[in-house]
Length: 576
Image (cartoon, rainbow, N blue to C red; front, side, top):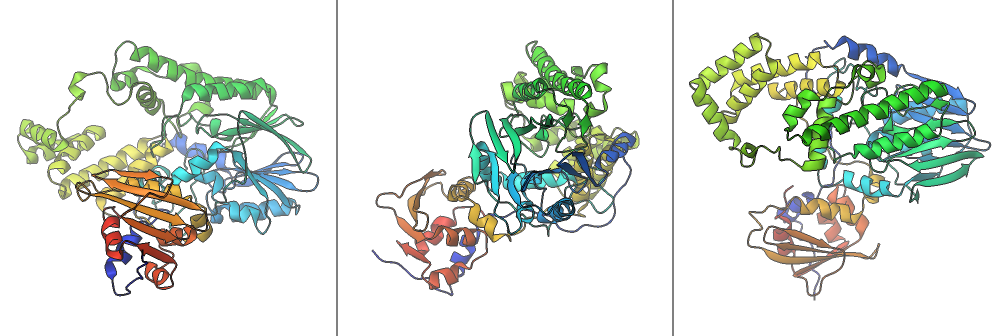
């Protein structure tokens, strides 16, 4: 056994250590050329987000319009409870300042209603120098861990499009459930992991003399909770209700949201007969009768879309055919809180179909479709060549058939990725479609991608700069992120076992690369090919590019048994 020290002049190990970066993502600056046209209904919806702190009842305040989500202050006898903390430190600071003007009482607890970043990334500011309990459902922990691994890159890219965070000032009309998402390149993540969780369906608490009931209520997320204040008959529904048709599916990319559970959660709320409803997006609603009608309509809209989708599924229709048929009935579609500012019925239909039956439409033609480039080539042949295909795209655009123009341009760009004329037509068609949308998510996505196609913006990643956040990431999340980045060609003939020991946490992991698969196990292997001993905090900082691996090795913070160069070769099997 021996521990080989780092050779400072070796550039390869530095390079592959950096491939483990677990980084938050952000974008770059863009040109100031963007349309400000929008659907008038979407523009009128912005009144929901007038920036202010509303006193809803004695000791109950909600901050609206400071960012994508609301933050709620509950004032008790000798302290306060804050529910949800905004999407960044920068978004949280003015909210915290506004709350301090109301009361200087200490923060006894912060409650997360669910794991979404716009509800948890401002906690360091809200908590300040105090050390309040951070309370959530127990399933929130695993959801937070998933944010930092597996699909983080593509989810960020698509989120940047959905929320329009790359659009220049004036480009975002609103985000459907808030005025904007305050998370850009220089924003700071202020997440603190929950230190008190509850399992099961319900938890009753008394904090600072405030009686609280926390109810597990799956809906927009599986870890979602709503909060009931029984003494005041006030309901905090989290993201299971906001004044828009709900995001039963988010185009940024989400796992299937079980809409039947969402309906059941709304029924739980209705049975409480609240007199005040404080959504975590959009404005409060007052009066038992109005709240009952609103929540009933909301759950009926969700159930209608679910049931009618299943009805047409059972008649053998494909997703495209079902989308054409499922429309909200007039008495629901006309309600302002069911306008499609955020989610849409069409996207919901497709998500429900996939949730029940998977990707296959039922049409055998879809079993083994042509490769995209092959289909594009054949379409071009039918049109009389690529030039004629491009002429048809231009004609479609002139005739305001924007969707058809997009589809033709995609065929052209599949055959020639650098075709500038096709890019111009596609960008113009995307812009035209974006201007028409009532759904802010669709509008922002279209307009952002138009700028990407033109080359005006690139949605890039950034290094994580918050060391406390890095330290809070479980080691398992880092290794899971590695597994999905294994290069199958480089590892096709590899069978190698690396063991990792982390003395400071007592953890150990085995990473076994076996011909294209990286098997991860939470123990140290017998007779590994390579053994690595390093403190977890050091490894996390190296993974996040906060610590120089060369210096860590030189100082003896990392020990390697089996050879530095063997580890170099092993880690180079994983994509950056």
